[in-house]
Length: 512
Image (cartoon, rainbow, N blue to C red; front, top):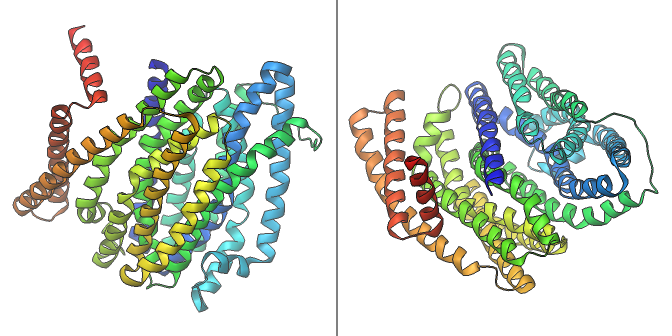
């Protein structure tokens, strides 16, 4: 477990660095453009290549690694490299075709992702999309290189690929303030291409050699397609959810898409920092334990992984809900990002945060099913989540506007996470789910108490420090510190097993 923990911590450190630069990018963007027409158009057009390849990227990373390991172990390095080049070449050709079709049919494509765009917004959106659609080529190649590096146990470089991209985008945003918004779009395209340029030397260093080739008769390619199908559908329905949210938001007042996007970026910071890091290093271990038929250890990993996410994410969710307005105000409210944009983004952040722990647990349980070579259950669950999200979107958007879209996403995630746990219980029997439920209840009670204390602490401190920048920083930091202390004491009193284990480890370190 120590190796897994070290890998997770290392990935978290890299993620923190990448996300800090990512936040700087969002702050520069909000300063220059606020939450208005250009940011709405930018996020809507950026959503097109992201949606197209989020599903393909997840499917590649889920199926490529075990197949590569199998080929490498049984047939040798030469065959596994040939398999990699075969996949890379096919992905490259598919991406070029997608880019050409997207360039030809730009307006109907954009209408799929933002059917509320009309007039000037539609005209500018079409021009933006014609440029950004070619980013799918670089995203496709980057996904294959990321999977290759991970199979070589290199998690650091894939975790850093957003660094050069974000720096380039930040520079392009600043230049676009003087030379026009199209500089931002070209800068974004160059930034995305930097992912490939950044990863390629490191892939070569660990043994990759580019040799374009196509072998459609390869049995491993056929096996990958069989495994990829359900994964692709399962992830694709999540992207359909995002597309539906943005489409409905395009019908709402100007700034709604931007508010949802800024709030979603804040939540994704938590997901990437804690959840993605844990999942990335736990998945290979789950696969090995499943292959070894070690049910006891397998169940133990499920419980520990789930409880780690619960203990970390539930208090963060509650904290984000009660401090949503001051957090958004501190991070974004300057330049063109005014008080109205702050209120819109804060309300979306609160609603997204309700489902934060569900997103994390869903990722863990999905990987459990994949390690059991069951890709159909997550696919079915994803389809149910999509249907629920659409129905709840239609209901809540009428009463709550863009915040209703965020709430619908959270509720559908919570419901479908419960269904995943139920399906896992039916598949493998008792895996310690009662321990997970107990930890969740204790953590939630502790977090609610923490939330009450944080609310009063922030109100008290801000009255004494004032609402200036320094006052905002002090009030949030002190409130968070108070919350950490209250939550820590509470979970110790409630005797959560993982907390006791952490305390024992710390005491041993201190004694040494």
